[in-house]
Length: 155
Length: 155
DNA sequence: GCACACCGACAACCATATTGACCACTACGG
DNA sequence: CCGTAGTGGTCAATATGGTTGTCGGTGTGC
Image (tube, rainbow over all chains, first blue to last red; front, side):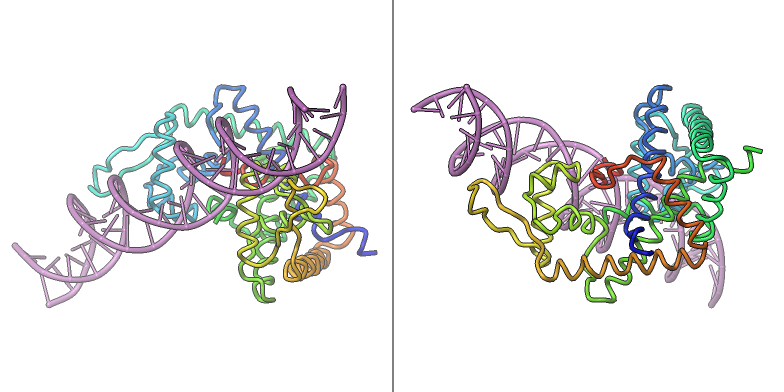
């Protein structure tokens, strides 16, 4: 009976699931003092990481041009989430690093994601949720980062 | 053992799953003579449906302003996928309808989605895939359409 | 018949991406 | 030591796709 499961529903549900999680994350982040971070910024924080990165590196990791990455960094700098500092060893590079506020946002995001996963686990059962994660791993590329999200949808 | 399943992986996998399906859909659509359709357009086609719709209706269904919907219709009209015709019964309305090319694209999309789902079914097992679909239904809003995708990510 | 709601279009603006160009700096081979 | 190639950051122009606001034309109901 293939007809009772239209093929187009699967991608829609995957996207809706993503949306639900991200929307709830940002609602909660807003309540916890980070109302200005937007979905994309979380990926940027992840791409910056503990060691910092230059705008050009961020562009490569996120799959956008270095100019676009630079503009995003500008915005995050205005919001107080990152700082730019000249690299002492390489006069060309300006290293982008998370501020305390940036780390706070990253830590809260991680905790909220845990809580959201726990909610799904309670709703579906831990075994079913693990099965979903396992199955998704089997049909998606292994490298989780390097998403080139920004340009993908609106390009 | 909650730690071995970081909460942030779940949304990422959901998004990657969506991406994989949509990317493969559009690769195949391009091979089958529709290289210019973009991910968003599929949602617009679905929103137009068999009976057609006005730009304002499309805006409501897709969660964007009527102006934005109108611009998208402009683009699809230029590409030859939809036509605008004045409504004989209501002088205000201009009904957007799919052209033959639009229907062709929609039909091919449906078939490709079925093939992609069959691929996942073969990889995961039909029972596991059904379980994933069932679980996603339980944690996502019931109304599949009305996505307001366009504004959501980049807004 | 008239107030109100709705549709479509135009305009101005904003956000985010792109490409191209340019300059400063580093690394390296002659 | 120096010139060339490659890299990083920024400015400029452009494209896309979204928003709000406005306005004229058209139905609809009291």
